[in-house]
View 1: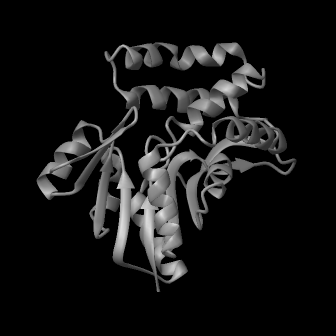
View 2: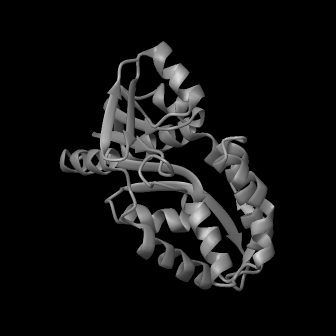
View 3: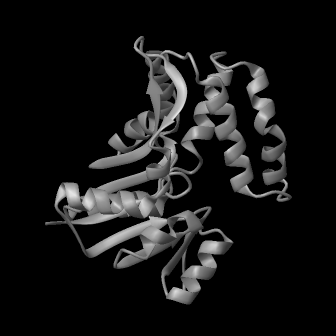
Length: 229
């Protein structure tokens, strides 16, 4: 049985959000109208000015994406996704990039769980040798165009259940397991693994890490800080 290492992707490995970069590129390439940016413009400014939280910003981007994806051919979506990966694939955090490489050398089963679209996640995670990827999936019609419907939305939102599913399907063990997350959405997964790493955590995850004695790691500029819980 292989040991498992489970990672969130956006904000933990990738130094941004794959969905944000994807939506910005879809607008820049005129696949989405410029008006799509208005849906998240205020939330983005509020986040940058530290008057609003990141969750409100990312959920506004999700609304922009889901409200404009309907009717888009999947081949066009994959083309734009590949463009995003070609530009941004190296924009990663050094700590998690090196951790992924080290665990891969040790034959860990690398599992990624994210709420970004699975198609672009697959492209990104392939660059770093992940064995399995769970992400948000969108329904296609008979012609291969998106209907706008999200498939298995409740399952994708439950990261702990996805970890259990991967363990059962891939014959993995939690003995010696590693988990990395950056928000409270990752807490259920971090509770399951032997080595829980809270990387650049938000306030809610940081407070939980302090109570539970989890590792807290912050990467800022060219420095990596390991804080005592």
